[in-house]
Length: 79
Image (tube, rainbow, N blue to C red; front, side, top):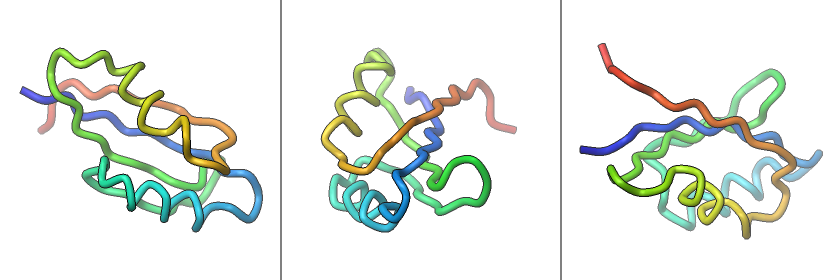
């Protein structure tokens, strides 16, 4: 079983497309959207059960330049 997690990403001004492109190249996401509002990108990740979610996200994004802040939402049940 897998864990679905959504990560909102706030980018440094002028870097949203560069950040999105860097994430696409990593091939770690299930879906990636640009968004309006407080955050610039929304990433859907499917994390293998048993993996440490915090470490997975940290490892996935720590080398992506231009990320200012993230907000992670864990999911439970899909309807």
